[in-house]
Image (cartoon, rainbow, N blue to C red; front, top):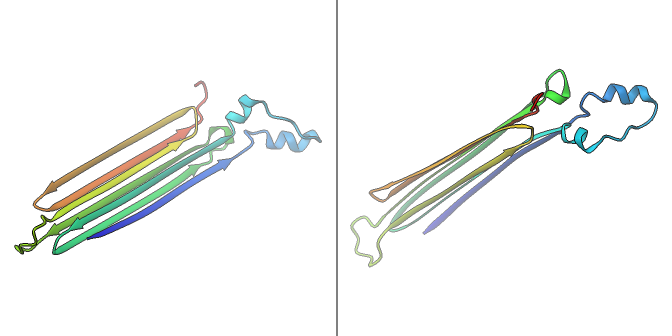
Length: 154
C-alpha cells in the first residue's frame, strides 16, 4: 500500500493607498483612513490545491499533481486593481493483484481538493471536481478559479 500526498499553496496579498499616497506626501502629516477607505485599498487572491492517491494490491501505481498561480493587475489608479488565481489538482491511482489469490481485493482511491478566494467588491469564483473509476483505475481532477476587483459604482 502507498499513499502519496502533495500540497501547494500560493497566495499573494497586495496593499495600496487608494490614490492617497501623493496626498499624504504633500499633507505634511499622516492622515487616518476611514474603515470605508481601508476596505478599498487591499486586493488579494489566495488559491490552494491538494491531491492524494492510495492503492492496495500486488501492483500499485499512484500519481498526483497540483499547481497554483496568482496574478495582480495594478491599474493606473490603485483603487481599480484586480487579482486572480487558478489552482488545479489531479490524482491517478491503480491497484491490481495480477490474478494472484491474496485473499484481499485490490483497491484504488483518490482525493482532490481545490479552493480559493479573492478580495474586492466584484468577485467571481468557479470550481469543479470530477472523479472516474473503472477496472481498478481511479482518476480525479479539480480546479478553482478566483478573481476579485474593485469596480466603481458597486
